[in-house]
Image (cartoon, rainbow, N blue to C red; front, side, top):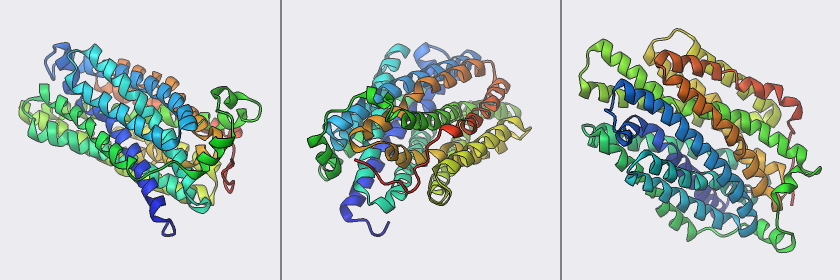
Length: 433
């Protein structure tokens, strides 16, 4: 990586910021849901009715986010092939920043849903533009490392979301949870400032400009032509399994931590202030463990894919994902130990995503790279959206139920092993125009 030019590093950093803030804006609701949902529904925070409503609406709104993410990913992936990677990157960052900030002013749950959906369109669209831009600017021999480094911004985004929520809801406004969540959402504006900074330094990849000047505009239907059908299926299946596991686990980290903390606080006889402090602390522990595991797992995709190949790497990560989820939610563990087990889930369930930033762009030629990568990486979110909704609906019955439901999520990654005969190996294959 030391051989990269200054401009190549700037491109990588620009895409890194775009994806990191993408994740940051995407998960803010999960942190504030225990305070946000009861407030908008007129329920008392911490009451049994509020807990049930939080679980249900967390599942529903996460599913809505994934549907909007899928639509935005497919549409903006296509847009990136037509108007360029840099323009699309900036456009999507502005959409998700403004949509998230608008959530701070939501007067009711329906307005919150509308603003979240708008944000989700930009969140879904950013990835294809950034991944395509990086893959086309980087030297051939450094594409895997650059792609994995690009995805390390996802743990950064989650770390930042964790810190912002903890600082605002757990420190500055810990005694007024009914308004603290609005200030958390306002932080969604941060990416807008980064977008304007990126615009000053980054231009369109020369590789894309040369191809766009002489080729016909891409069509999404081309992905299903005989020439590209197998490539599309390969990328779609791997992304689908990873998405189902990641969103079913990650969306409920704050909810699981909150329920476990409330049960622990009841055992310890803590008052309201002590209970709220314990909740924020346990949410912080679980999320940091998940993010730290994800960061390490992302970087480990580099040696795994370069030495073993993309196909064996996927098989290993999916097998480890199943084991980590089944152990975390299936074994009889102390509540705090269960929080630390999120490190193993992050290492596998989260870590595998470090490969998509180079694997999916490798599958498609330049004129279809944004369209194909965006479709494969995002369309699976329509199906993945079912997971959080079902988990949330079932988990609204109580702490034991949410743990039991998440245990069954552990069998989802095993589907990835069954799909291996249809997965195309791209190790050693140069990008095609």
